[in-house]
Amino acid sequence: MRSLIVRFKDCEGPGILLDLLKERNYRITYHNAYDPRIRPIPDAHLIFDLIVLLGGPQSVTDPSLTEFFEPWFNLVRYASLTPNRRLLGICLGSQIISKALGGKVTLGERGPEVGFSDVEIVESHSVLEGLSSFPAFHLHEDVFTIPEGGIRLLKSDLYPNQMFSVGNRIFGVQCHLEVTEAMFSVWKTVHAEFMRNSGWVPGPETESLRSQMEIAGRKIFGAILDLPFSQFRNSVSERTGSAAAG
Image (cartoon, rainbow, N blue to C red):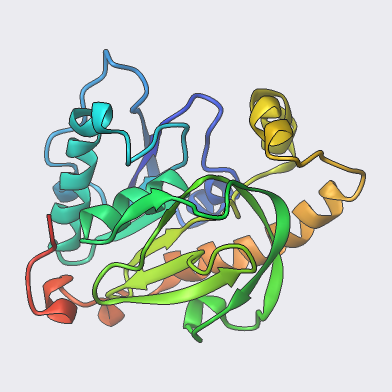
C-alpha cells in the first residue's frame, strides 16, 4: 500500500508513525507543502491508500492563506468520498480535515495549549482499546469543532476536542502523539519562543511524559492502520446523508 505524508514545516515529520508504516510495508511519499516550488500531486486520493496531514505554523483561519489551503481541503473532500482511503490529520492537519468536512476552526478562546497534559477518552472506539487517559503534547492555539457525522474521542482539560473520527476511516488528532525524542529535542529549539510566550518551559519530567505518550500513540496509530477495510464506510455521505461540506 502507498502513503502520502504532507509536511507543512520542515521540522515536522511522521515521528513514531514512520516505524508503524514500515512495519506494515507501506511505500512512503513525502510532500513538502511549505515549499512554494512544489505543486500538490494531482489526484492523490486515487493514488494513495493513506494520506497523513501533519502539523505546521500556518492557520486555517488566516484569509491570506485561502489559496494555499484550498488544494488540501479538496484532497480531504475527494479522499473522504473515495472507498478504502484512510485519512489522518495531526494538529494543523486535523484542523484542515475538520474544515474541509464542514467543521469550524477558530482561535482558542482560552489561549494557546502548550506542553504536556493528560487527554481522556470521551467515546469508546477500537483504536483506543486498553487506554483511559495518558499524557499528550500540545502545541497549538487554533481549535476545531467536530465535523458533521464525526465522533469526539479524546478531550483535555483546556479544550474538549482533541481527537475525532468520521466514518471509521478518517481521524483528526489535535495533540501531538507522534513526537519522538529526537523530534522533541528539535522542537524545543524551533518553537522555543512560542513555548516561552505561552508560559510553558520543558522540565526534567518531559522525557518521561513523552515516553508514556509514545506507548499510547503507537497503540492508537497502529490500530488505525490495522482497521480492516471491511469496517470502512464507502464515504462520508453515508454517515451524513450528503456530500462533504465545502
